Amino acid sequence: MLVTGLSGAGKSTALRTLEDLGWEAVDNFPIRLLGRLLDTPLPSARDDLRAPLAIGFDSRTRGFDPEAIIAKVEKLDAKHHLNISALYLDCGGSELERRYNETRRPHPLAKDRPAASGIFEERELMQSLRKWADHVLDTTSFAANELQQAIREQFSLGKNTQPTLTITSFGFARGMPPVADLVFDMRFLRNPHWDNALRPLTGKDAAVGEYIQEDVAFSEAYQRIFDLIIFLLPRYAAEGKAYVNIAFGCTGGRHRSVFTAETMAKDLLEAGFSPTISHRNLASRPTDELEGKPST
Image (cartoon, rainbow, N blue to C red):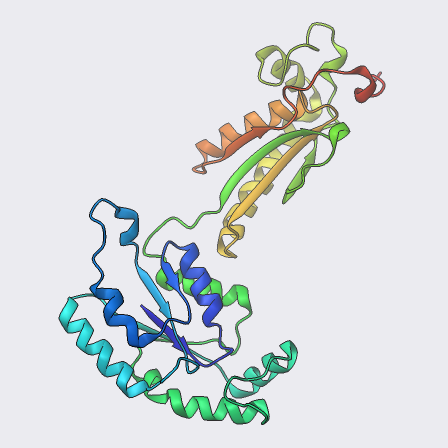
């Protein structure tokens, strides 16, 4: 797929989104070399190199000639029996002016003139490409995330675009996790550390799990957390979030957070998600000083 359009209309954002969807993306490609690129044979053993290809170009390309580009692509399309399409990104002039004023970047065709002059000149230059393109996307009213969503909806190729889900347990006494989208503090539950029989065990042991579940606050709190996560995950996916990190913390990171994380991962797996689980402080030595005073 050839990706082009007006400067400032979102070509770079579109290409990055396509790349996230599994396309092989090349920006600012000299379109005169397209034939050479398509003539290059792919290694038969490398199936990963057969990903769909997205090539970005615009009016800044040396020797840019829209009519010649159209003729060249149509000739290549017939010769190679490939499915070649074109995506054109359009945008209203006043919005493009606003974007250039906001970023303080000069329009590539304006030189020492106002941005509006360059926008008008480029629109005239690109008109034949706009008429020829298979897909025309007007980004005038789009924020960056809305453009990403529009690209995902049209060009995901049916692939799963769910974010990568990670569930982490940790101990507050040993510091917060550096990357976490949602953090749940499980220190309101009674602490197995202060039971001599449970102290050397972890949240992976059945006895610790039973002890935590006996706390009257656990069941309702856990269900509310689960319902919130189930509510949020599809919305994160809709916004194009690539990674979602959910962290459960307790004091030392060995009992309550571990059990909750393990239970949540299991329930989310049954709900159709594919979480990866990590226990940051599971191997840490139990220490009374870190755990504070036992609750009464």
